[in-house]
Length: 212
Ligand code: SF4
Image (tube, rainbow, N blue to C red; front, side, top):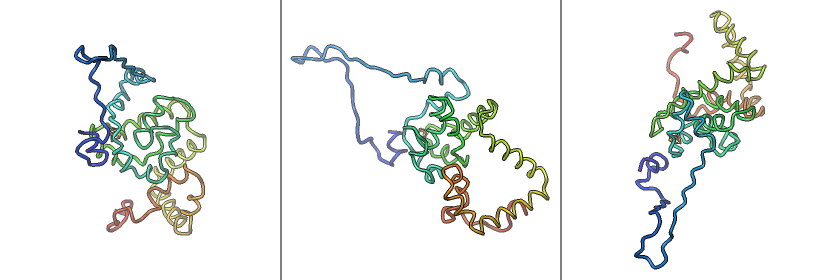
């Protein structure tokens, strides 16, 4: 009952299959055998990895997709896998590690809405951060990104420089930078998650965090 309640708010699932095993002698022509095939598909490997095995608790309800701001922006196909949304960003690179899936853990703002909605409380933001760390430590992140983070680290360590950079960024967005990002593909569109759709954000009260 957990799955339909979390997925669509239903009390009971729409499609339910009950397997009762081989037939009994009471029937005229009972099936004599029941074959159950479990496809491992890399899950034993994930189970052996204590830092990510919680992802296997997933019951596929999809609640984390419905609340994810990144999923709302890029849609299911952007994940390039049958598993989309926050759970897909964790599960896909674990099932199929490689260059094609290595950037998926970055499709998240780490807002935490997914873990709040998850009926089995999988700590998706923590798992995403662990996967990001794995990619960074393996040196598999794009060069431009490594340079970008080094620069932002330099800026954030210097309050005066940070204030100037924040003002320049606000000016950039005010002068139409937002529409520029809109035409630059999925990666740049993620930058817009926090700024593009103002109707989805709570109104800001008082001074900015930096000013406070
Ligand atoms: S991670 Fe949680 S919320 Fe997302 S599909 Fe799995 S069980 Fe549902």
